[in-house]
Image (cartoon, rainbow over the protein chains, first blue to last red):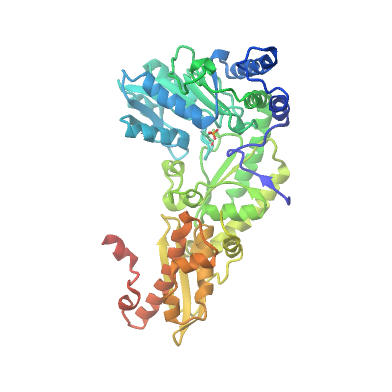
Length: 388
Length: 141
Ligand SMILES: Cc1ncc(COP(=O)(O)O)c(C=O)c1O
């Protein structure tokens, strides 16, 4: 293959060598069903127990509070739907934000058709919520607060500990979609009053299709999948042993190197931000400092995001956009609209997301290739003419 | 997702820019929806002797503009008016369903430019084209 710079790590990451090595035995000779009682299968059972302990200790949790799932979407669905069921006698009111991932947003929208009421807290232009808005939104019948730990499109980090404190003092359950945060920024269920937390392995160099839901001990979340009684009876189905082992190995590696990775990756991110915001009529989206180390997100006025992505692809650069044309709906991303961007500007969004696998040369290459692409698309844009 | 033909016209768009001594200019779409096409033509003796486009939009929007200019260049007004969005999409070896609206926009941009030509000649384009491409008016209705 010709040159490729992968700058879409918020979409997914490459599997780490360590995770793959840890998984290999369970994809080959160690195929025993963890539920069987003979010695051969006990190897698989031990591997899962070990992975659960590892994940728990990294998250400041107890092993019995970790439930493995098929990924972020499943964890989000489970947490939100089951919390509503658990607290049905208290009410049907949920508080969330206007910048949640579809795995949360579409779950909430579905619940609204079933009689739930949702308050979507507004965010400012940097993607931050106001804790006073949160306090004011809490009602007698509020059963759940679900707010993401960090946003996948604009990178803004949300104040999970503070939100958790508000939820705790009001006796409301708190779920956080920490899919983009885990493995990248410090997050611990121990000091943060989190009742439920979603994570997925493929965002921190683990395998796809494997995630977890942390459920704080004492929160008796209803069963997601009925069956053979796996995952303490709450999520039945023969375990994805290799996936679970890979998740734990990748998380361990990411946590061990979190500080150095964050330092190096955010320096590369800031070079991108510095270089690309020099382009006229361009700006950073999200918070300038309270942001994920890997995410550099922008809007370029007078051009459209899908066109940018296609031309970057021709230059061998993988990136993504929240423009309407890169989705099926013709609506630009709800996150970009929620931070107050007008439709026509939200169409020109670009997200470059880095990992520790990227190099300074990758950044040089992007900084060389992207500005002429913006210029070329503008030279074709009737809007750019009017502006000049 | 896109055919090779679409990627060719997106990557190497034909007839980009503006005809300097244009006597027919049409613009359709709006920035809120994410696509705008502007087409300028030089029409001489009923024939489109020159045509260029500028487009704000996705890959399909650029490609449909590009192929539409190729399909009508050198053609008579009547031939250009008979160009359908389906023909535009077919000439690109098809478009994803979500992108068919781009081919509609390309057809409309050609018609809007020709409507402008008639108007400049003092001819009401509506009986000929079926719409005067006063889009602001349409939206109010
Ligand atoms: C914030 C957030 N939540 C949820 C998900 C869904 O995770 P998964 O793809 O593992 O279902 C993603 C990733 O796509 C995400 O970025």
